[in-house]
Amino acid sequence: MLEHFYLSVLLFSTSIVICGIVFLSNIKLQSKLLIAVLLTLSGIFTYRAFNEIQGFPVVLQKTFDDVLVIGHVIDEENKSIHVWLKSEGDKSPRSYTVPYEEKLAKSLEGMRNKHRGKPYRAKLNATSDPTSPLKQSIKDVEISELMVFPPKTDSNR
Image (cartoon, rainbow, N blue to C red; front, side, top):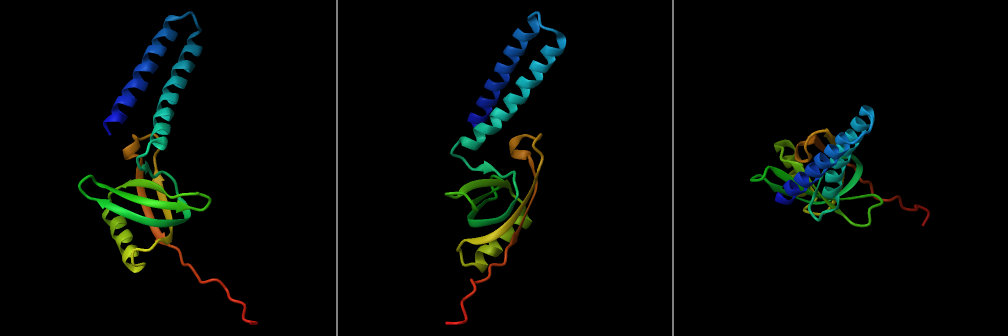
């Protein structure tokens, strides 16, 4: 996670330098403020975008109505849970990380035991705050198993 620190310092420093250059120029005050706000927001969103494209698990910040849970790893020492999910339309599964919660950990373990370690369909509700730092942006995650019925068979045969 040290690379995240360096990346955020680099983005912040670049924004400060560019804002300084803009504020020393002969542009209207309103334009200077607009440029400063846009630079700050672009730095924040660029940082979050880098987190998406790196090879590490992405912090879960969305809700899935129907997702295939391939597996999970509970890391109590680092206070996180890593979940491997495949949603409809995805070609391959993605790895997500969520903060450790006892209730979520027990739910995941219970479903793993129920399905004997095989993938299962679930609904995942994630409540997040995009203005918080990336690792602390998730407020709550709830998981509930979806009922999967066998396909209908043709009874005329």
